[in-house]
Length: 163
Image 1 (cartoon, one colour):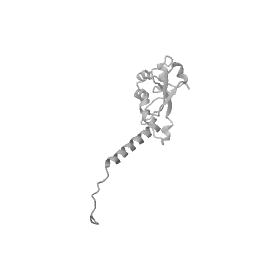
Image 2 (tube, helix red, strand yellow):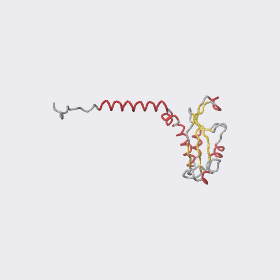
Image 3 (cartoon, rainbow, N blue to C red):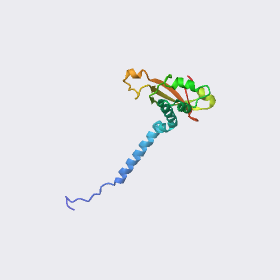
Image 4 (cartoon, rainbow, N blue to C red):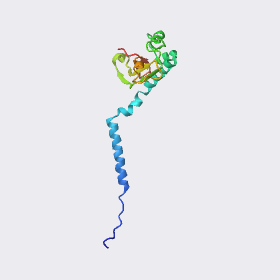
C-alpha cells in the first residue's frame, strides 16, 4: 500500500440520524402535551357552547327574536316581553349588529348548584355597528356592551349569571 492510496470509506448510515430525529420529535411533542394540555383540549371542550351562542346572536342580528328566544330556552319567569326588553331592536343590548366572543370559562356550582348543572360563562361584546369596531376607534367602542352568558352543558340553555 502506497502513501497516497486510500482505503475506501463508507459514509455512516443515515438510519441512525433519522432515528434520533424521530425520537427527538416524539419526545418534544410528548413534553408539549404534558406541559400545555389546555391548548389541545380547549377547542373541543366548549365547542357546543360557543356554537349555541353564535346561533343565538346570529338570530338576534338577523332580527329573528322569536327564534333567538327559543334558542335561549328561558325559564317561566323570563317572558318574551322581557326578552325583547333586553335583546330586541330597542332593548338594552340592541340593536346588535356585530359581536366578539372571548374564551369561555367553566362554572361549577354557585347559583346553579341546586340543579346539579354546570355551565360555561361566555363573555360577549355586542355592538350596534357593523363591522365590529376596532380597538382604536374610541367613539364606536363606547357603544359596545359586554354581556356574560351562561350556557348549561346538559341542555344548552342560555341565561344571565345571577350576579
